Length: 342
Image 1 (cartoon, rainbow, N blue to C red):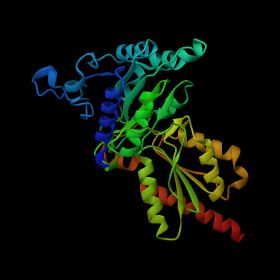
Image 2 (tube, one colour; image 1 turned 45 degrees about the vertical axis):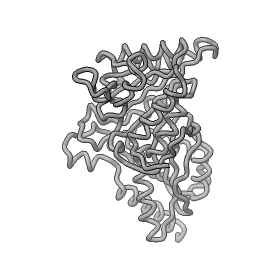
Image 3 (spheres, one colour; image 1 turned 90 degrees about the vertical axis):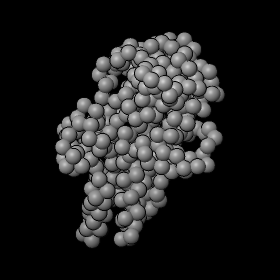
Image 4 (spheres, rainbow, N blue to C red; image 1 turned 30 degrees about the horizontal axis):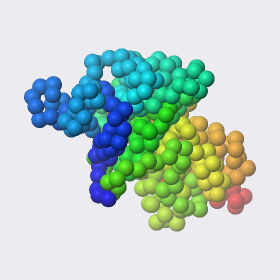
């Protein structure tokens, strides 16, 4: 086991799965790179260099630089998956889903259903999401709730390098289309990651902190902020359970409901817009299934219902923060204490 960045962990998962299974191919815009040659043969390896070096080992037949046409190469990936390959397509920014959404939600997501369960579509769409990178409103959105809404798609949101490698390995081995979300502000974050291949099962949440007072459910990068908030709150005697669902589809409802019932207080942290978000979905789930166990109203910590601002000062305020999570936790703990006193 060695220290690896989020970027390195993703690249390692791709490399190991391409070595393991010759059917795994990758495609996308400017993903080749790594030959040490001039011009097109030494491309960037994606905008943040994740796939740089794969061309040198696997060649142009398995590392496919595509034209700037998301509808074309995402559609090609869906067709390739239906006919025997296991493609990993890189949709550079999730904001570009608008030009290829039909290929994803009307085609790939429905093949298994339309062909009586006989068709499998082992396709992964890797994509970047999230604010904090000063990339403005057309390159910074959190659109995983839209994909979660579509039956037939699986959606993964790794919160660190260890999760990224294991979840991507599982995604590539899965026989259904998977949308794999990588937060662009996390690529340089490091932690210990096993050198050997491993897979993390979908639909099994990870409890990163255990406490008695409040359950915090967070997604993707927000898990790290929730952990930091929980550690700060523990110094003041408030202990929190932090739940990382890992995947939004399938969703580990059991762990969410169990931990919500144990503490009776729930805060949901979601970088996506608040309307029709994972935060609102989790709040609805807990209110419907565990209402009798609640000691206080459910609190949501989300971005505002507005485009991501380009101004650094405004963008910093826009993103959920450790301070906002701590304030939400404190509010519902105080609510419960007040209600008990009355």
